[in-house]
Amino acid sequence: MTGTNYTYILECADGTYYCGWTNDIDKRLRTHNAGKGGKYTRVRLPVRLVHLETFPTKEEAMAREWQIKQLRREQKEEIIRGGNQNNDYSFQ
Image 1 (spheres, helix red, strand yellow):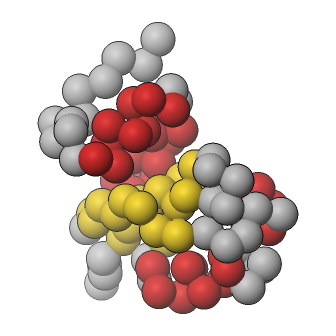
Image 2 (tube, one colour):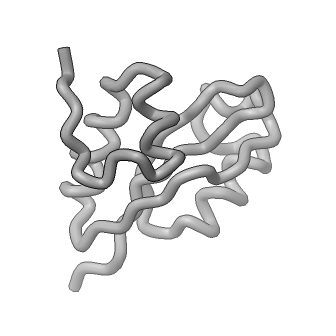
């Protein structure tokens, strides 16, 4: 049985972005803010959720995470603002 899987973007205290995926977004946010999440976020607390996408499978969520991680900051900010619903970015 598959549940809901999420790709998310966090804004860290220093203004940088962190992208990840999970199947339990509430737990993952608590883990990040407890300093037990990704190594990147541990030293940039607190973090706040600024973007969330849902997927039926973890493979789709992981693929979207990879896509977002390839983007420039400006492109990530466009996603956060909701400006690119088709995810039609060039990954050059």
